[in-house]
Image (tube, rainbow, N blue to C red; front, side, top):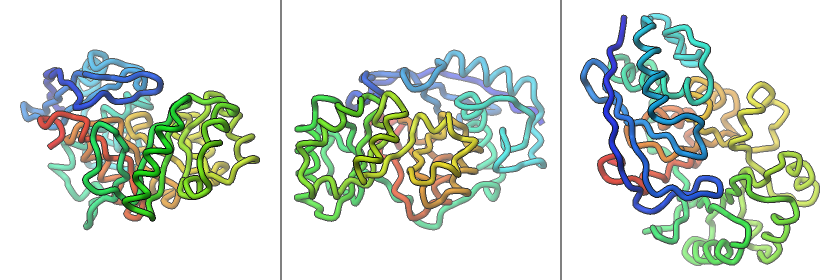
Length: 304
């Protein structure tokens, strides 16, 4: 069968600017995708994270669904495009195709995708502009060079309200080995013992190896995970931070199935409608705390 798509673009402002690498993004535009004249998913590309714009996403989606028959009877959760069409797409282009397919098929064929019978566990994303009503069990903090005092204050504040909290420090590939050592130098032992892992701290991936020889704090692969998708078995000492928008939904379902103890899902500030696919993947990982605390950065029309 053929799916007929239509599109609408909607501009919005984040409730507070979001951090992407060394940049902050204050506003964006969502691409609302409708199938057979029914709105089903709002897609957002983040400059600095995604390689294409939503204009390019719209072109790709329009061409793909105009040219391909969707064979629902060939559905396979772990194949590109869920096995319903032949494609050479990878990464974010595969992701946007699969988001549309997920949104459509999860309504028409809800038994095709994993569903959780309990709430998805979510780590809190620390923001000085949006304080926690209650400090969650796991808190993610974005760290930057020269801001160790701010990070220490955030950790101290959280620990005072929840002594058992675990921290995930996200370096966004902004550190050298020397600068990260200097960053951590001021932290008391109690704070370091509360760090579950440091996510993607180094500009140079080789610094990961040196860091592991000097510190017992685990590391997590995020953006660089893409370069290691074919040999994840060799990297089991790391956590895998899976961003479905960078590798596709089908590949994310596969990794979550193969490595449930080390896989943590991370959103890319998706809208609520796009997050439905991510929570389906999270159903395979019911004991992990996932990086889904991003809807608070979106206006109500995209976060409810």
